[in-house]
Length: 212
Ligand code: B1M
Image (cartoon, rainbow, N blue to C red; front, side, top):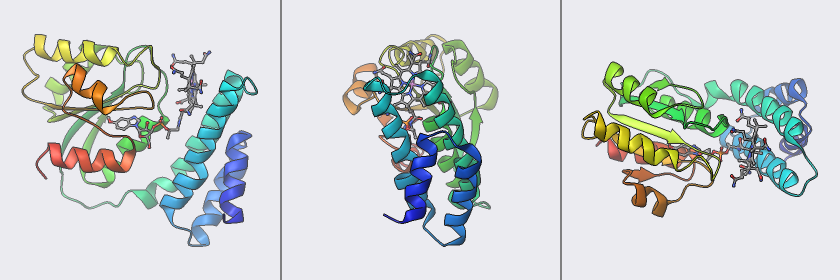
């Protein structure tokens, strides 16, 4: 592995925000591919953080500072992942479901969709079903994206689908879902239109759902 990528990993794991920013800049200057910096550097580091949390070696504060360092690195990387000037591929309302505060994956999906030319209406985290419904109506969105990182919150996606039906807008939007505990079979079970395991496949799915 490139030593710069290895340093990015280590510094994200240790929550070193400023060094992560500098290292991502250096990696870009060294012409390392942005997707390698993202996948092998930043995302791999967060997997390790999760593993340490599970093993009881890390607690919530360590997870939180690692997440801040990751987000800072991601912000530097964003212009290199997102290419501007593409015609709108459709309007997407996106958010993390109620009860869930994880937003790194959702932000990454938003960023990649934006790069593929979608217009993004990001509702943030802990989004209640009625807020999703209101945003879809208000922005006349054709696609809804929901993210959940907790096994206890993924069931809230089902409540959003019920709220869409109740409000009479289910036919207006395609629904795609994702997040670590979410699966394709779960998507089918709750009646979503598709599931994507990562941000780049979320773009492929969004395009196919929107007929692009
Ligand atoms: Co939390 N957390 N966390 N956490 N956290 C997990 C998810 C956990 C798996 C850690 C573990 O135990 N190994 C575990 C969940 C267990 C479970 O439910 N099975 C967990 C827990 C337990 C908790 C708390 C309950 C801890 C506590 O308080 N005791 C608590 C819950 C708070 C809440 O939400 N109500 C909590 C809190 C936090 C922090 C706030 C400290 C922080 C989040 C900060 C933030 O997001 N701003 C945090 C973090 C950082 C994590 C881990 C370590 C990393 C998540 C992450 O950012 N991954 C995570 C462990 C892990 O996932 N390995 C963990 C990187 C990101 C790029 O990947 O989000 O999976 P991911 O997104 C991917 C794909 O999933 C997909 O594409 C993305 C890019 O490739 N994707 C989509 C995501 N959304 C999509 C939507 C789509 C399509 C694809 O379409 C719309």
